[in-house]
Image (cartoon, rainbow, N blue to C red; front, side):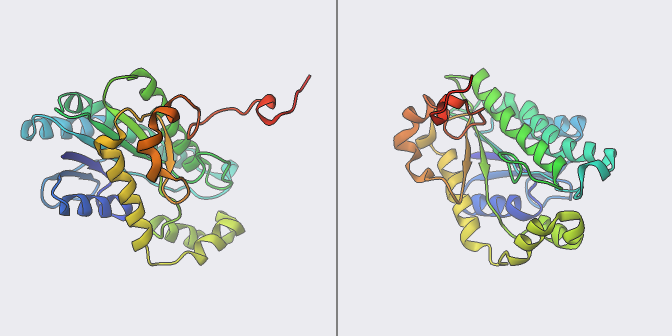
Length: 266
């Protein structure tokens, strides 16, 4: 497969880029830092930069089979009413705008794939429940999930398939940021969770990679608009259940109505 991957310089993005390339895929790496091999230095929050990268990739590839959006940032950390509004804007620009910009720029190449093209976006903590002191990150990642659902609805029945992954707690630069901010800014719960998190990510990363490979494969054809948790959801059974799953609201952001819980409100 020809795969474009953003955020390839560190963390989960780098692991996926290296792993997928090692399995024989052609990987175009996009990141803020200069990229070795086939790739480009690119700030995903800058539309003109992303569009220019897409133009360069188009000159080398006739099509792309997949896009994986891993680029992200977590700062600012702290109470929302004490956040620098410009830091808030920068977070949303990288996490939300950067995801949309990449999809928008590479969509024409994905449409040319001879297979069923795939888009995989990464969500994170705060996208399905409130995450105090991480308002910008949580709001941006929630926006990513809704973007995935919206595009899946627009592309219904047609490729590319688009889904989001929640990778779970993995020790990365973002964990180090939580520890550096301490209990005062991150909050006791977040700080203690980060402090307990093991440094050996191998098993967790392999699980994320396996889910990515499933979503890249023909086994997931037609599965779209879902947020799937790598550590918690039984995604190994998705291929067999995809038709039933697509008729339900499972793995989506939905408002729970009173009758859904067996209680009537008047």
